[in-house]
Length: 346
Image 1 (tube, rainbow, N blue to C red):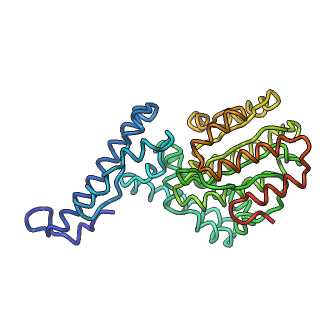
Image 2: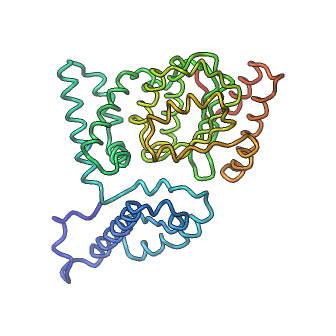
Image 3: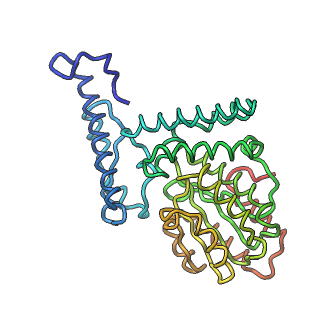
């Protein structure tokens, strides 16, 4: 945030040197971010070479700090997997728009709560209804503030409907859905195992929501989460429930909007194509591009580039035990508990 205008006389010779330096640093930050935003609008992020050139500087206090913060940034980005860095979510220039989205969303939500004479849920959800959420909603709607407000309020409605699980982050663990580490870029990674699913999707989805929420809290206000969806052993009849799929997609597209950095689907079978066809209809083109469909062998190589050696070994052992016809439910559950990042669900 720039220095308060009321606190400085001008940017001319009468303005203290330190204040002029701070103001010019802030301007440099916003101008550079605006240039990046314009490039994104022209599709620059589709070009791998453009991604390497993206640079964002936090607002420095002096010109010297700004110059220091830029050193080595290009080489750092070049050494990482080619995906949009999370820090590009931080935009000084859209702050006032996000504030308006937040205000209108809160006003509409509390108006509804007063009409229904409900206060407890409103007080709780105000913790989630913050500026970072407003910025994510804006990004999900490509800057359309009106649509962002509608998405924001819908997200509040869904969180109120599932208030208990979001408060406690506890639910019955019915299958292997867990956070099992962080990738080399710091994204929490959620693993989902189709073979372990023995209940219909409508019963399992609370576990998905709780795990995703826990991962988002690890990622931070504007951070994103990676998913590994292992489709080996899929039981299609447990997931061909359009109502449950729609409800799950609604939650992912509102409460968890702009929270996914990539979804790697492993061993995608013909039996899963019907499920994918249903899900795909509810996804935006941007979200669809975050999916990658790989064989197990391809996934082992792919994750060797994204994970450190310990996490790579864990995912490879997980693939092996889930494909071992002799492995028991108890053995797989024990492995899942031993390789969960953080406290396993109750």
